[in-house]
Length: 167
Image 1 (tube, one colour):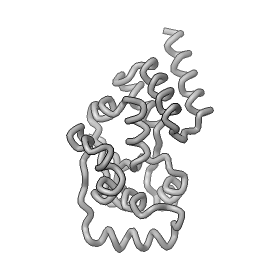
Image 2: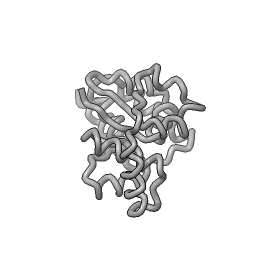
Image 3: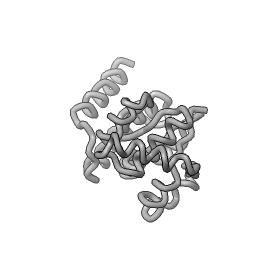
């Protein structure tokens, strides 16, 4: 089972793209968030996430101290994002984030970090999502105001369309 910690923006992107059920349906994958991030950023508008499969992980008391240490080094990163980084570090798993400062902090801290495009690639490669659904999902994300590297999105789409045309 591959466990992945995610921040709020990845879940919001996938919700906008109508792909949350597909994400949680990835075989042998599990997704989690720190409890503080869930309560403060997701519960009100995305309260159904735990029923879909999102694991909400309570933070031990020493996590707060670790976040405060990280906050001294990474002032542009939110407290909740630092809780996600701390959880990924503690669990030894990858972190999903589209937030630039958090991604930079994760790299500095030696935590594997990926974003929406990586997750979309996993969805398509696994067969969980067709190329057509990926394209429609990205279109919906763009309409919703998702801040993705759209030139990289187009390159990913073009790659998959070309591969599909060759088969």
